Length: 112
Length: 111
Image (cartoon, rainbow over all chains, first blue to last red; front, side, top):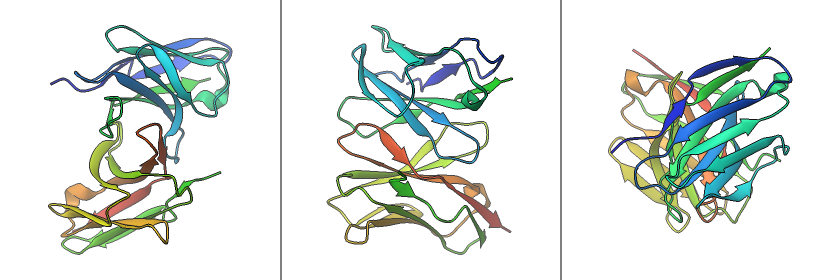
């Protein structure tokens, strides 16, 4: 079975720009969560999607938004990028109600 | 509000000895706890987990202990091997919703 894949692996954007990160969930998983990991910190929950609906959100502003598609893949969109948005963005997939979370390798976003 | 804390940023252990990584939490509603291992440029990899109804779970060289009264869990690795050198994250969840992570502990195994 395929794991979680994320694209791109690295990205450099300018402050004020918009960015879209993509995630393909593991086969059989219907839930996707996004996390932001700043340097030297643990991952912080951004939001979760289940059956194309947002199913929980962390303490992130509305300029962080997402989508989940019928094939359970997902996008994370960030508008009006700020320097502090520079981080590793991780996608994790799971099956609803189950504790087995599988993480992708992440997208390293640098905002300059 | 840091609900999950790993108070040791780093730990150095000699190869073959026991590594003990610690984690404290504040939310008594957490019902499941997980340990992840992370190498640079990779995502976290699941290591071992424990339900809140248990106090110990063992998988090969890895054992997780949960002390609910103290809101404390620990990961024991024995014997420690060079390939165990990585950053270890403790995480907790309630009802299989979001994972709440600690800050991580960098484990270095010395030959």
